[in-house]
Image (cartoon, rainbow, N blue to C red):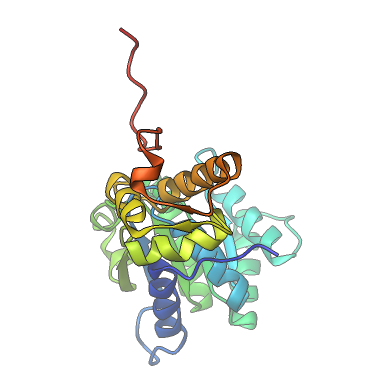
Length: 238
């Protein structure tokens, strides 16, 4: 079973979900989790979806309205045959009956198309369910173009950059049986640009090196000038 890191962004999404699900009647039922790539938004949302049995769909650039509805219905385990209005009615009915949340990842792809934005609003209005939308850091500003949609968002959740405490939580997952000293963890966080993904990649590299070198403990001095992943493009050789 995959171990889930209980980092800060997972806590943020969990709290937002609880607020949505327990909201007073009449309050909006959508939330937006936004932030740079690599901050762990998708991982946090998937972990929460497994906890509360939410429906999770990751948007694709090539999808139109019918494709999105079909993918949602596939996630629900329902039939996907019919016209767009028929598929929309099925999605709304299932959400309303189940009481489950719908999560749509990579929501930036939806804002390229007025029809997709209106479709998602129709899903919300038709089901009065709860929706969690995930996207990049400029998503809240981009959504202002659609006031009727923007005004239905109850919570705007900025994903947080990785902290040393988060990094410590990741160690047992990506670098098990090795003690990674605080000075090296602080360095990993500093060079990560806030990215959970980059810290995870570097911890996995440290684990591999520790296995080769026979290290049980590793700090920054011991690591020395070995390369670490920063996300920067490789420099051209002189």
